[in-house]
Length: 157
Length: 211
Image (cartoon, rainbow over the protein chains, first blue to last red):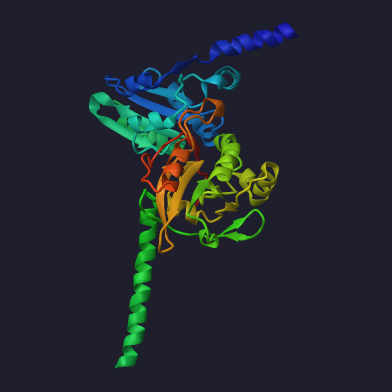
């Protein structure tokens, strides 16, 4: 029984993506990515209910555009201390397949304005950009599946 | 002739009020900036009494704090809010905490649940409910917790002096290095200009009433 439970845990763990802890510089680097690719970067946290509500839409978009120049990236705002006991179990339970980062920058005041001055700091928030085509859009609220699809259609190379 | 003018003037005033009211939603999108005059309010506290800033005759200003029961960031800051109030109320800047969340979207932010939380934490400040979200929209609050420090002017109006966060580490109070709100309040109390009047933090989006 225990072995079965363990086996189940391992197989689940293997299916979800890793969560890479990043600092602001790496987020900035992602934001400045020069490729002709649409980046959809969603800021979320395990404690954020509306974020969790919209997460399946991002996961579905990731699956749908896997072989196209569309990258869905989920950036967790959870504290780095909560990565092992909150973020990882959440990610594994939901078998998240999008690229996963955890931004380890506790003081929002040092970086929020540098990534988006219009952002008040509320999550969920989502960025859409293709730097090659100088396209950019920022949404600071919960997004519906239709809205997400429209924005992807609008910017998808 | 003279009798005719009065209704005309009256109608012109009504029209002006109508135009002003129609203009309000447009300005709501951005809310207050530092330097703006903040409106007073009359909101129901957890003890059943209505609270307005004008009730406090001796206050020099207020720490108007949009916060709630359910947001983990708000919960993480509850004890620090109590400390902030206990430190600055005697210096003329008490806290008025406002719950902006719609109860249908966030059931645990109901008035009853506010009463329970206020009792559990023994809040030394009012915890009022902005049920219509009118005040939240007027101020332009977007997340919890979201602080507006206002300073009472000689004419009795309230000028926004600081908008932002409490400090630089919501998760670990022991690791706090920058107490943004306290720095602003110390400057105000000392009669100085606030050197960092705008700060930002990650927070929970306000749960707006669904149309």
